[in-house]
Length: 353
Image (cartoon, rainbow, N blue to C red):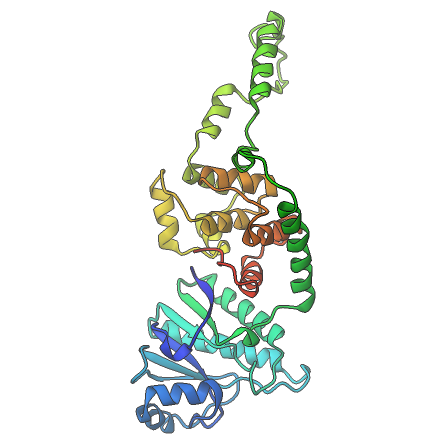
């Protein structure tokens, strides 16, 4: 998927380019900067000596040398001075310039640390928001895999209020689900909840058989210029019932008036994966991918459940992942990156996989 948040050591990541949070001299320092220089070897320092330094908000590029990446992009982030000294603009420029250099070199993947969120003191929650907005703006017109790499949990933070709200939402539903013994077959019935019960189907058949002949379409009076408000035909209902996930997704995209690229970018799904789904009517996506498209289409909770059912999945209160998805949909927040930030904070798989 185009934007991933991962936990790990950026110096060990095999991608086309990694971004180094450097000081203005570009001659090495502490933190991520020192770790990258140590892993790359003295060749990186010799290359940096020729660059003549770097001003905050700018970016310069060297080879990767002993690192598993081809390039190292060096950028100087802002020192936090309270937020009224142009810090946000400078930080945005760091991401924009680094991505520009990566694109110029033909990179298909690039990894960022959370710039300025360490010793430079930029509040982590705000630093994450700037990173997300800057990267997603770039990805609107580009096809690139971008990583935000955090070393440990303390390096990543969503707002305390959001974390608390989601934790309470999970607790209310997760406890409720596990407070009472489930009867045998309850889970299967949950997965079929969008279908009519046997009794309902039998009642519909009885009502249809008992309907007077004058209610048939052929017997209804025809009025010129007046549209008949007819119920969906049985054929159309059966077609929708028999739709595959791929067919349902493409129909929903058309109904929403979206282009394919608008949909898969909003879902944080790679173009190649979307092409597979479009070309294979029987394609079975992963659950995070299916939900990512539901989020991109801004489907209601019931519509999301219907789309998931076509992929062979259901939402359950026995899954924290599912409850977090329910939280965002019921609150009308369809920003896949904000959802992924929350999922990451709760150690859940991200959308778009």
